[in-house]
Each structure stands twice: as structure tokens, then as C-alpha cells.
Amino acid sequence: MPDGEPLRYVALGDSQTEGLGDGDPACPRGWADRLAERLTTVDPEVTYANLAVRGRLAGEVRAEQLAPALALRPHLVTVVAGVNDLIRPRFEAAEVAGHLEVMFAALTAAGARVATLTFPDVGKIAPIARPLRSRVFDLNDRIRAAAARHGVVVAETAPHAVCTDPRLWSADRLHASPLGHERIAAAVAHALGVPGSDDGWTLPLHPPVDPAGWRAVGAELRWAGTFLGPWLVRRLLGRSSGDGRTAKRPALLPVGPAT
Image (cartoon, rainbow, N blue to C red; front, side, top):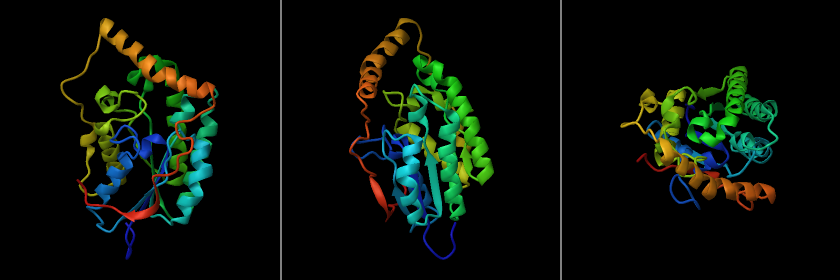
């Protein structure tokens, strides 16, 4: 925590940090908002900016959000990006991690405390995504290594089974549900050592969910038709869900009390 002035928190990233899956898609809440609310229990005067924009690749986050973040002179920054890169045909883990490391280096050099997270096994969230598992594992390893080089805090969501529980994910399986966003906020708060946080976010939900047989097959087919198909069409047309969008909270503003 800074001495003598209110904490300034800035969030960088894509749709997950913007908050898709948590409330109104036009102006979602999301885990970064929830983390900012948690920080008010430590510093009621904390200010918070969220520069994340849906659909952004890691290189775009670096190009569009790093300089504005530095200009805000933050004490705390979260940097989460790379999932949009993972699902592109041309994916290079080293390139994605390189963009993240540039942001880690610049932000820590400016005196900010930086936090990031690892990604859960996408093959357990959407079976059709199993071919991407090796990409996730590779990127996670590179995120850990880059974070270690720059003293960046890592919220390790990858090892915990609860993080692939379908109840933590919205219907599109790309974005966390409100419960999922709450767990992510709790994970980052715990990694940062925010007073009052603990490892309760790692606990499994009850009762367990175990879809099987034709019901599971039907769910996969419905998901492919409802979400995967439109995503593929956008890719073929060179479009992004973030086209024409800007950050929902580009300036540092006071945060209301935690709810």
C-alpha cells in the first residue's frame, strides 16, 4: 500500500478483465471491479481505472493500454491477456508471453506492484477445445517465468479443479460467470495478500456436476451452434467483438464500498 496517498489501481486486459459474463454485456461488472471493491476495505479512498477492451490480443493490449496505464501512475496493476491469442490458428506462446513481459517490465520499473494469473485447462471447460490444452500449459509456464523475472504476483488458478467447474463459466465457456468473476477476484486478492482474503476461492462447489452421455453431446452441439459458429464467422470476416469499443473506465475514479 502507498504511504500518504490513496491507492491507484489500473486493470489491463481483454473481455475477461472488462467483465463479460458478469451482468449487462454493454457495461459488465467483472472480477477487476470486484477486486477494486475489495481494496476499499483496506483504503476507502482507492481510485480505479479499467482499460480492458473485449477481443484484444496481447499485442493490442500492450500497444493500446500500456502507455495510458503508465500515465495514470498506478500503485497496483493487473495484467491479464492471451486467451484471444490462444484460440487463433497462428499462436506463438513466446510472442504472447513477450508482450506480457514487456508490460510487466515497464510497469514494475515505474514502481507499480503488478499481478497476473494463469489460465485453467480449457479442455475441461469445453471438450471441443482439448487440442488447445498444450498451448495453455505452455503459455502458463512462460507467464510464470516472466513474472518471476520482474517480481510480478501470480494468482495460480490453473492447478485448482474448481476453476473448470461449469458453474464458474458463462454459457459461451469463454467468459466467467458472476460466480467465476467473484472467484477470480478472490484469487487475485489472496495472491496480493489483501487483508481479509484467504484460499477459500479454491474450494470446490457442491454438489459436483457430472454431465454424461447424450446430454453432454447435445450440450456440445448446442454450444457449437450458438457460440462457436458465430465466432468463426467473425474470424473469417476479420471482425472482432471489440471493434469500435473503448475502455469502460479510462480514468481513475473512486470506488464504492464493497458489496
